[in-house]
Image 1 (cartoon, rainbow, N blue to C red):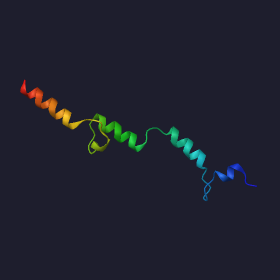
Image 2: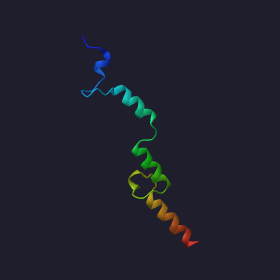
Image 3: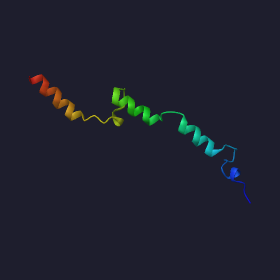
Image 4: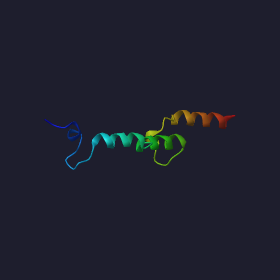
Length: 66
């Protein structure tokens, strides 16, 4: 019969449940940070941006015609 705690450990002895719990409390993930940067003007973050570049170009073009 296996102890429940033994089943949660990796071969090297790492407690998987504990690592997951600590990761959940650690703050933002890498991709969450990239998304925040994209929304606030970070370099190389266009992939994460929800800005419609064609809409922005149209707004700029329209404002220049006034």
